[in-house]
Length: 165
Image (cartoon, rainbow, N blue to C red; front, side, top):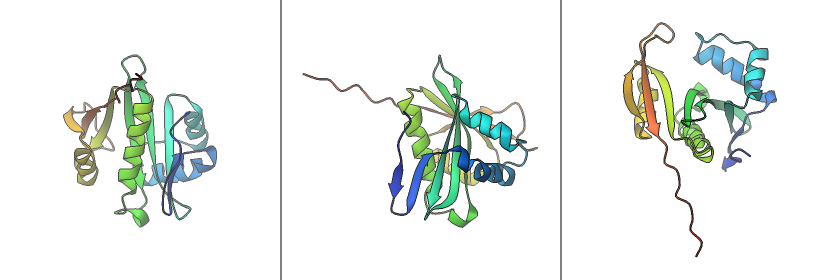
């Protein structure tokens, strides 16, 4: 079972369902226009065990989402493919909450490392990642949306097992 629901006053972060797919698709088209995907393909991805989606609701409005992808189940690497928050809700900690939720899920799955790609000029995203202890690794070999991209990563801290005496 994946991480449960996190609620903070009027905020809810929970696993996305197929009823969230049209909202996620609209966010992809708006914030990641270089990534071409249709609703059927998105729905297939949402059912695939290596893709994990969470949604953020603010006062029951769709406020954002995060997508994770298990890249290597043997070496325990997961990638943060996308995180997006509607302009209406930016600056309210929703991106931070989605990232924290994604990290909790990665820990629950016992992932050792989380990676991500970010456009070099996306300073807002890079500040969020720095604040959360992600480190710049290298320049990516390909551009994203026609712009230079960077590879960032974070070693996941797995909780020590509790000892019973």
